[in-house]
Image (cartoon, rainbow, N blue to C red; front, side):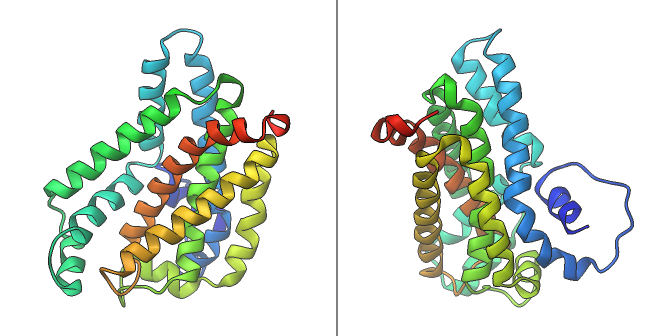
Length: 250
């Protein structure tokens, strides 16, 4: 049941199942985040492979970026936009948290969204054909693993909200279970996969520390922002990592 909670949260798909002990299962669902992310990446990667036979690399990359957003219902992009609006404004921490809850979109949100989409598009455009599918799987698994790491390791900025619900009902066990799942998703990339989890870890820590310089902890919005940043970092890192360890590539 906790897997279903994770799947429904991270995608726009829903299952007609009874909802019992939802609050407890919210925290436990974190352990399945990398698996759900890997499934999302696999689905997009398979569609990308089919598109490679009928369209140009540029259109293929645009459609892949659109699919990644569509499958999640724009969840993480929304978190990124709210985070940009709140974190980059010159205001006290309390005001920043208020802005992040405001449904209105500001200039920082637009800049953040455009930068995110352009970086993801540019990164996917140069991923080598033989590793495109494993790359999508790695992007999905590691970006969601990063959310687990951030939730378990860093404090919550609020006493309520969705991010707080995950934080209060999760513990280190979720990260212990989630990490092997993420590593399993990286297996096709062999040693380069270990480099990617190091990239994901570094991007998560860097982003979380940047956030905590502006507000006293993380929120649901910043978890989404971390997911987007790690997803981009992984895509960018794949080509140079495969060059650095060519004998271990696929």
